[in-house]
Length: 266
Image (tube, rainbow, N blue to C red; front, side, top):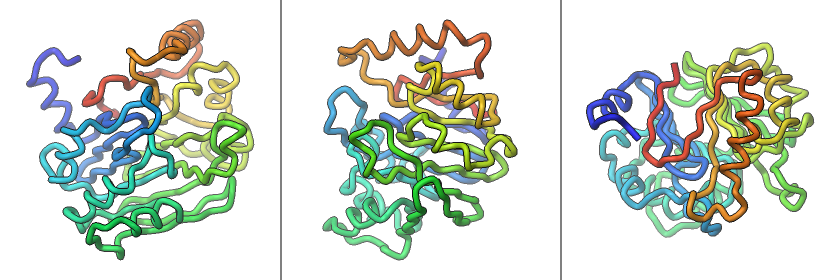
């Protein structure tokens, strides 16, 4: 994955980078801030990647480079994005980290048996296709309620997060690639340095069109691809073949597949 250990360490200590830690989970490092999104999960669906035990322990114990996490954002209460016990265990040992999510996620964390600082649990509950903004540790966070992918998931409160700390990163969670999720937003007017999106956004032609029509970005990072050995529906191959047919006309795209992979944002 990396040419050598030195290259990996250089990337990890670059002032603007992203490390892939789980299914849709990433650790974003921007200058002096570290923001974890959907990084502590325990998926009930075997094909999707859990947070590896080693990385989970390093996060909870604050072992470099997974130390000093400023903010944890959780997009929604699905096991492949969030595990309440892992997050509560983390917060019990890292009481200064602020957790931001919806009411379902926050209540599940509070119901865990760990002794935690509930003052650092922030609940945001915007109406569907609306947003709420907050500043946490000098980081501007915009939480946008977006319809979850899948007709049987329409009751799931999925929050996309736009973080801005000199660099703008948008994580869509499991947002469906439908115009209702984007047409009321002003992402075309704001330059997004990096879009983090599920694989359908580069696999499905109408989803790629959604990005080009509504989001002003030059970089897309793809997450939520399954384990290769469990990819019974050939999602990885189908996604990459579809993307390759259109990549000359699309936005530069990086596939995050290997846990621990670190890539520069700029």
